[in-house]
Length: 126
Image 1 (cartoon, rainbow, N blue to C red):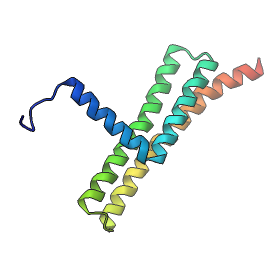
Image 2: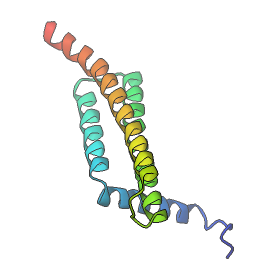
Image 3: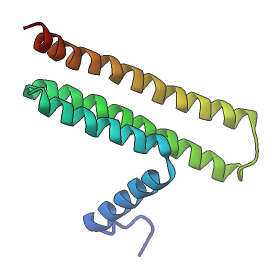
Image 4: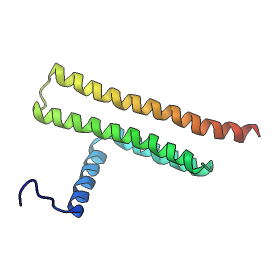
């Protein structure tokens, strides 16, 4: 089979799940973001979020998790390319990709404050 030949959807799904497994096993921040996302979804259930609020929450969670996965891809690829040797340029690239995750997390945190803060404020004031 040529390297350009598709192995089918099952094989593609298997590779994707293997990749998520690698991220889960090797990336502490990925596990943290998954837990935070899960707890946020539970909080949305407890506060009776409307459909649109769930959609915004899910987009915010997936935004952070996607950024974290891209950060991991960049780190793994650069480490492999430079054989784990120090390089100022590699450090800069890794720092930039970590900055992307930070922006995604801060944006999602603001979204969370708006979604949960409003609900909690209404709940405690009335």
